[in-house]
Image (cartoon, rainbow, N blue to C red; front, side):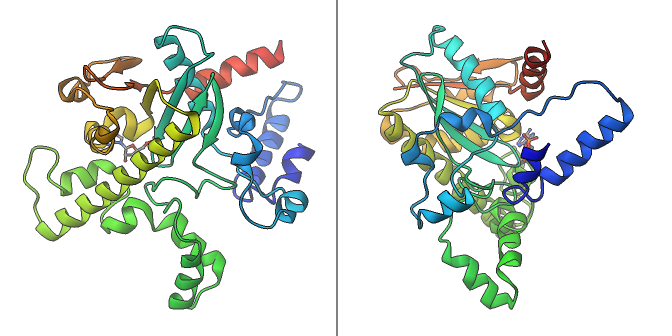
Length: 299
Ligand code: AMP
């Protein structure tokens, strides 16, 4: 609990709430062991050159500013499943996992270990999300602060809460609403201007996700499999197709009919024949990982 307290400066929104939960459980069920599972843990294998930001080194040395990454429990679960589908031996495998939910992050998983991930010291870095901008020119913080006459912390709030696909579309952070507005769900769009903005938001999203997939293929020196998971990754065939359309140039293609299928339990393969890498949709199960880790630690 002291260690979690010490990290409040790095996770001011999450850690105090988590400590409150631990204390409440201590009161409600005294003597029952508690286990804390950290979504950053799986990313501890990221090498120094990938977690160090190109800013003055003292911020790392004195203030622990480095890439930590999040969604580790999910990246760990789906990458382990992908390793199983690739033959069962983690050694030698290169996997890009795309956890695309309301929050979203990608990870490069080499030999079963995370070697890079898109989220950073906070969950704001990386791909565009429901309401978060992901990686942008950092000078935009100062520009927004100056336009709105607000402090930098409030400008960062704009990037966390009012940006991403919500910000671009002006409609919603929910991909179902955007797909409906863009006319991707079978019915023609109601409003052409809204349809354009919804489609633009989805295009921006797909483009950035695909660019990060490409960068992780470079980071690993190749790729065996790409995995889609979480709310958008598991349910939106449009998002998967839109992202993979951006990967055609490097020979990664999906079977559009298989991609449309919703008839799967834990996973489905949507790879097209001749694709340079396999493409899987895998239902994530963070709760199971947490339960297994808890059992292992308690025992
Ligand atoms: P998560 O954070 O993993 O629970 O993902 C939630 C997000 O998944 C929602 O905000 C939606 O944008 C998206 N989502 C859920 N179901 C669908 C669906 N059937 N089609 C498109 N997007 C979906």
